[in-house]
Amino acid sequence: MPDLPLLLVLIVLVALAFDFTNGAHDSANAIASVVSTKVLSPRTAVIMAAVLNLAGALLGEEVATTLGKGVVNPDVVAGSQVLVLAALAGAIGWNLITWYAGLPSSSSHALIGGLIGAAVAHAGFSSLNAPSIGTKVLLPLVLSPLVGFLAGFLMMNLLKLVFWHVNRHKANRLFHRLQMLSAAFMATSHGLNDAQKTMGIITLALFLFGKIDAIHVPLWVKICCATAMACGTAMGGWKIIKTMGHKIFKLEPVYGFAAESSASLAIMGASMLGAPVSTTHTITASIFGVGSTKRLSAVHWGVAGSLLTAWVLTIPAAALLGALCFGVFHLLGLG
Image (cartoon, rainbow, N blue to C red; front, side, top):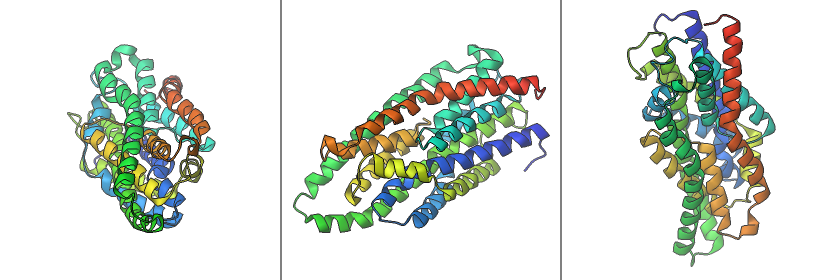
């Protein structure tokens, strides 16, 4: 690692801590359904998710670029080296609140919200890259759960059409095996989209400190972020696993396969476009979509209210925390 100022070292360490909490908070995205259907034990599922989160994190940097220069204008915030630290503090604060409450909110949007709040506190709304926020943050925020729900609904109906003549017991045995593949796909796509967000925030910090000339993710940043997320995933997020795996809809292997596969395809597509979508939003909506094909009453729609509240509140709440943290750091003379 190159020679870094103390404040930048602190920012990198806090960013990696955020990545760790992201892995722990969002590990449920990849393994809730595979644990719920008893295809894998929690321990085995967590290890698998950790390894594949690590692999997925190294596969691209499109989302990292969006976080690095698609939320704030780097040239406008160039004078504020503490901005990234405030953004991370706000995001971690909101992550811990929702983690404690067992709500599967979005770590991605917590980070984006924290960054928006800190930037506005520093230089006003002119610091924001409004067109990019609109097309690559707010639009996916609305579309990702809709796409997840529709994809899950359609895939489950397609599977029913193809396997209608297969004995239920045989079908469950088949999808018991296939769900290991869909869970692996989900874990990889989670790493590809979510770990890149922290890569982007560290890259922005390196730019603000003049350590790089353009927003491009160094290799050491990729390796550190991928490792931190994998370690966090290995810790597990058991409250959230319980919410997603049991409280929304009682899953069978075929339903788990449909939910994971449809959500993974949506997340992979978004990652290629550089859109930092919420893996939480997408897989949760997919589970709702899959469950709806059985019968509407099979889905615990009451849970949707608390989940929707967390989704809607995340960006503004994290933005407020980010702005408050920026104010505190500024008063402390950190920059």
